View 1 (cartoon, rainbow, N blue to C red):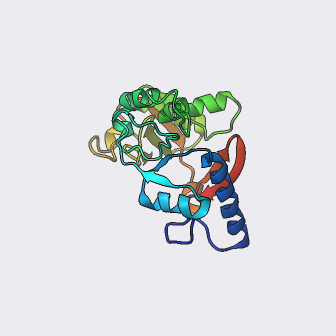
View 2 (tube, rainbow, N blue to C red):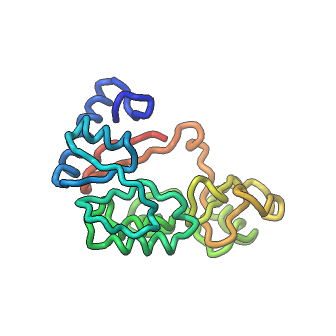
View 3 (cartoon, helix red, strand yellow):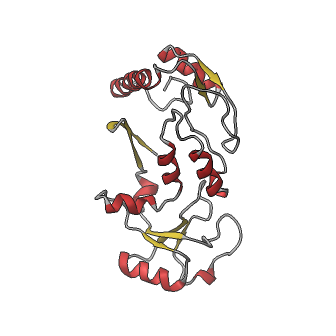
Length: 219
């Protein structure tokens, strides 16, 4: 949250107030730890500059066991987790009992996008979503009838980097490529109506700390 090209905030009064609030939250959340590891020197420098916290840069793949006695673990970067979701969940389970932000069980739950169904069942409004064990023309026809729209978004329930995620307007799955990153999902998938506002207005991410709303980011 500094003023570099990597920062998310401008120098407007509103953004300055948000940045100060984040600094206070970081100080509370991390201040008790005697030893913190960061994912990069840039993060460590920011912790020192804004919060007075010394952080050690510790580069470790998520699939390697954590053997150091860290006061706090922050699993921020997990490249490739979607290629081995069961292994990633096992790695998170191995962290239980350690001090981790966010809790390992929450990180594991978030791997599979079917968590949206849990949120919907709890009364949270989500984009209408149809989950299926396998895509077919029949399932797509059902989704179009339910959503009242032709353009659909197809995506795997476990994915990252828009892999096998596409806007589908064709009449049949036979009309699109079946190989490569832009091919449709081959396993468990989710179908949503295409929301044009995502391309024109963007998408809001709401950030909460300890159950309290902190700020929002427009992507």
